Image 1 (cartoon, rainbow, N blue to C red):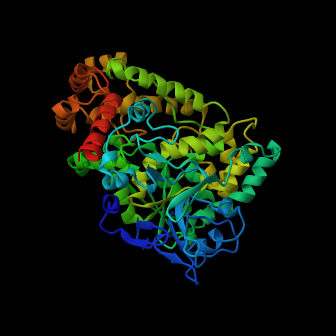
Image 2 (cartoon, helix red, strand yellow):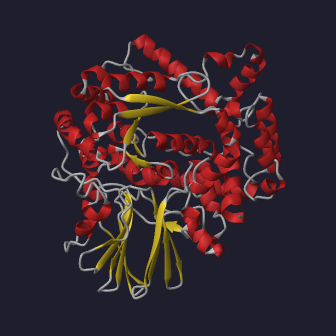
Image 3 (cartoon, rainbow, N blue to C red):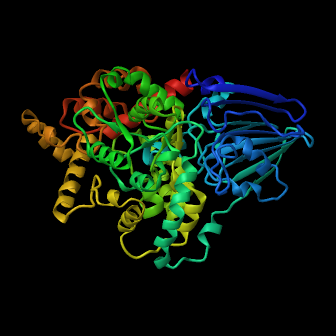
Length: 572
């Protein structure tokens, strides 16, 4: 089970066995990271703890030598006698606690289920792993794809409701606490119910800004504490700028970077460079380059494999660029989930596949996936983001990032999320609130434009137009516009727009740098033998997209991802 999770040669790994409790465990972590200290054993030897991820204590007296240094500081917390001990966990982590005296094993995860934990039952035996491929390796009989899981991915970009792509493997629900004695499962409980956040006493909207101003400095500093060098992954938007406004440069190594493209410096790069200079940080641009295209077949396979088939193959740039980010610093601070928590945005959506793409027998399964998603989105908007969007959808990208760097964001901190539940119905522009918070932390940052706003009305309209135009060139070109663009190809209209906002443009790359690879995989006999797709349509979309008068970027990625999942996780 350990071997398939050894994605890099520098990982630190180990194994442990306790015959009396029938616990057999292996781990693989980044060297020097928070959890590079296992096994964690109590002084009397009664308790042994294994953990993956990080806990960010809100204890103002905690220091880098204490619980923020290594996971050793978690042992007194988790072995404490009070029943609600796991409620104090703050971060993305899961773990196993062995009570040797009672021959009892406790398996748990974080309250949102963000640090994914897979499981499989085989009679009286239970198998757990942080990556599904470990279970597939140990139990070859599990190597089959679940039609509903595939349909969820094709319609929603993620598998829903704690299912997986594999019919006999599931994931832990949020805030799980499962107990085993003598190797036998005894109890499944949860230590936190999201209704506790949903039913809090509302906060007067007029108090929100002041409360956030008081919270943000300590919140961001707690997530910046690190034994290892930390760098900020900067964008041109508000979320990373809010971090920079309150981040103590003395606490970090003053490093930042931004991912870039091959056409020009996008707005993210230009703005991030100014933000870094204003805050006295060094800044690097980590670009996609010729090596990315030369190694894309390997990168795509590894991306699908590492993410257990859950992340689209075009996200291979995440693997490529985060490998380079590690050379800057092994810990990465991001603004992920700032817009969802602070401003109520929602990027997780479902839609029907392109007519004709999937086989006739598979269309009803797609329809059911879309209906399920519509039902799931009902209810509290913030609960959807924290307990569904995060562990089902966002985790898949996190899996790739975590394979190369330690990832942090302050915006899913328990204290902040709890506060935002109390003020979900706030009148006014949340973006303006964020701008004022930035001004409070660093007035110079608040005056800078973002990649899509914080400027005059006329320039804002221009930025929005350029944003949509660049999206078309990335992947979203409607068919009627693609035909017009093909007619005008001699004048190369893309040179005016491509790369202004985004650095990845697979719509173009599938036709140019990656065309031979797309033909090789999608038109292969193995791909045609899969039961999910309509072979004539696949052949049609490859021919027309590569010709240039139709846009099938998203469909090509879906077929490519499912095929690579079959090859790397099922057939291999």
